Image 1 (cartoon, rainbow, N blue to C red):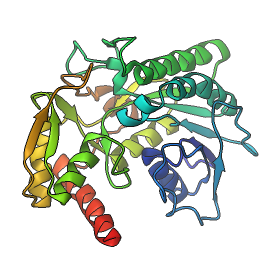
Image 2: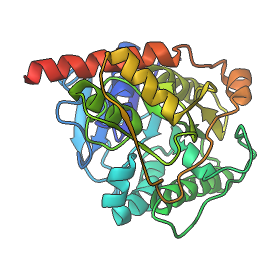
Image 3: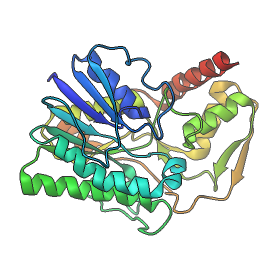
Length: 314
């Protein structure tokens, strides 16, 4: 299926910018909607001059003035890194609630894809996590502004589907990384790589035995496109079931970059999940999707991108 006009809220974000590029490659006209509050400068440079691309600088907590007919809306707008959503707690809650309502309104008559998150599982008591698991979230902890915003967005999307017959799909995205991330956004992979390239200690919270499942950004975007082209309501997990400890990821980054950095342990973050790994059986069966890029290859590509930017800046 080729989309004629796709709207991507959060289109200047890390995943959103890559999604815009993929949609353009597939022949779609693309409108990116973003208030640029957490965007990396230059994130859209690769598509900015494309004749089928438009950036609408806009806050999605206000009604979205999308021109013309739309056949798919991807709702990715939200601060996504802990550093950003802890800095913007109320804004994060508003974009998950009011922003989702406005994005659903913009998609009336079109396919709507909500970018939810593995954070809805909280510190999971089920492992690996299936879509039927309801999660273990602290509703008043510091991370709750993101977790509960996404849980509410899922509830609102599901209610709109049931109540109005909306054509909706929910994706639960697990740890995504790759070229295009902000060096200072606070997430694990860019933090490890930038410190390794600078020869600084890599900071690992807690014991480092907590696990994450890293999915390369191109694989995540392919999963979002597969969900959009289906009629599946979700939720469906999009992630890589290759589970790695945080310390192992740090060690791999040091090896890939050839760094002399050492690893330092600090106190664990509040409500930090101990294990995180998706069961992607549903995505394999219903979408024909599975990640293709292993962590070693993805980390190498990401480190090369950061190294090139560091060299250009120098």
